[in-house]
Amino acid sequence: MVPDDKDHRIVASALETAGIVKQAIVKVYKRSCHGLTQVAADRFNAHLLDSIRTPNPGDPVAAMIAGLLPKRSNGMTSKTYLVTGASDGIGALYADRLARRGHDLILVARRKDKLADLAGRLEAETGVSVEVIGADLANAGDLLHVEQRLRDDAAIVGLINNAGIANEGTILEADPDYLSAMIDLNIRAVTRLSAAIAPRLAAAGEGTIVNVTSVTALMPEAFTAVYPATKAYVLALSEALAAELGPKGVRVQAVLPGITRTPIWTEEKMAALPAHMVMEAEDMVDAALAGLDMGEAVTIPALPDMAQYEAYIAARTALRPGLSLAKPAARYGAVMAS
Image 1 (cartoon, rainbow, N blue to C red):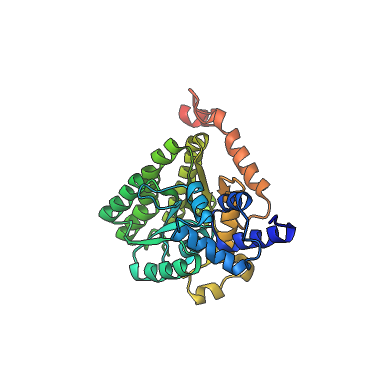
Image 2 (spheres, rainbow, N blue to C red):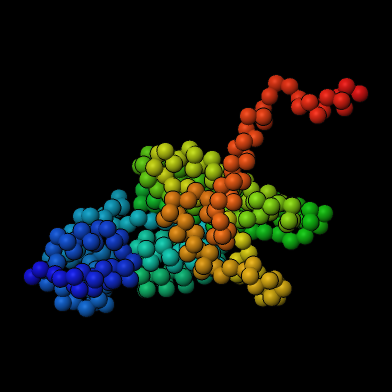
């Protein structure tokens, strides 16, 4: 039986909603579609998911899927993303969207109970495999455990560095121990996790690192002192990693959210802000993933005209020739001579 255009549309719709690696499944459909054309879209989705999760050796569709998709060392089919800060907010939404794209997940956060609830829902709704790791990435021992997993697990092809904390008040009011913990989580953990996975991804010639930073990286004077400084570090790290790893086939993206409706903001604080400045977390994550698909190294979901950021980068680049010279600038001469 030769499928017609309507049959192709039905199957294409089913593939989209199934959240599987579409390119591989399309190859299966084109190679062997006999007997599939009369299957309703929902049953077709279920059949494909069952074929991937529990392959039946007698099913030619399952056999071809298994042959086309990448393998783990234990024989399981997977391309896995590790997401930090995944228990709620932006991290949980990244987990949701990646699962619906067909990726198995390793979710990391302090609240293992919340991770377990999210994992159960995503497994039930998408059919992917979700593992949870309860870890405080500001703790050296917990961080080392996650680092080792990134080094050793060849199935992990992507890292979403989302975990982070902020503070209120000026440095005159800040608790130094809290500031140290913020630096540990926002800077040290992001750096060490990126360094743990980067060599393996570079050797493979593919993979993704996404670092969630903040628009405060571009305007530190508008907020408390230390938090924007940590986010400026993450932006600089991401830009440098993109330059180093991009030629080796590894995607690196910095995501700069503005004010985003997440659990870290109380309803009272949200209500005090102009509505036009607050983005829903779902919109932020969807825009960030669209930017990743577009190949952006820096994604600012709210910025209407990316040419403005490009002009900022051009101005920064124009400074380079004068940043390191043998003599002080002439403007200092009179003061130096006095």
